Image (cartoon, rainbow over all chains, first blue to last red; front, side, top):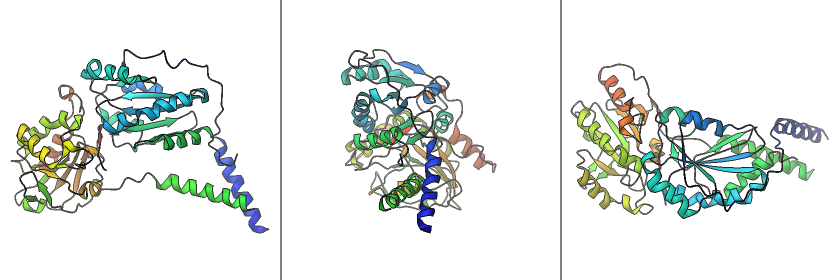
Length: 182
Length: 201
């Protein structure tokens, strides 16, 4: 009986400590995914990009740092595209932050977006002083890509790794249902 | 009761996992490194102990294929040219698995070194045993090590503008080497830059 009391107490503690991470699921407007193909890529400094990495609305943002020259990045892009499509109605938005060389935007990045028919929004991060913004994006990031940031207004997680769809979906599900006791 | 216990177990597991997953092993600034013996492109085995005259080393994990490495090649060559005579030669190590990246094979390393006229060793981390000890995660990834104590003095990027050499305003590695040579404290001992993840099978 005593054990039961302690267990219940622990579960109660766990419950209140996780409570603040509950995500509200709000219906998002249906977006036509087939028509918004990008033909230009906007270039951002870190200061300009920062607001996109800390939005405080009800969405879950999946920000993938990649480049056309990065083999493992290109390999995992379809998983992010799939996630963006399948979870669009669950308030999940994918942003692809390219670290391509600024000189190669017209020559490589835009043709790549067209060829792969990328539906997620692509922006270019062009900012020297990588030392400053890599640490600012996440203190654990060594700078290797691929790397991914998943966040909502309550929490953020950074992943210096490659993803397959299953792993990515598991992470998103954790964001959608952060409280396992619910 | 069983369900409660299971739930509790899962909760504890999740918390433990969250704290143990992201541990970045490898040398930190101030750590003493273990010497290594790796094959150079000329077939000779190279160890740090072979360098009797050196004051230290600029160990750079780099490769043929990563555009960030390629963008830094001329800067690596210039570093060796400037600091080899001052006692800090460059030691380049390719950490990639040649099966995962055929263009980073030992033969392709020889070709690249010849094309670019490398005057420093370009070693293959055969079996990928050395880079994990350093905790290198990407190419290029620089470690400055002093010879007498084999201590790591600096970890990070070559300068503050990897993608565009014309925009460099701070030369991290040169500043660190100049400080070491002058017997001064290095102002920035750890910096970061974007790079290609090290490729494994």
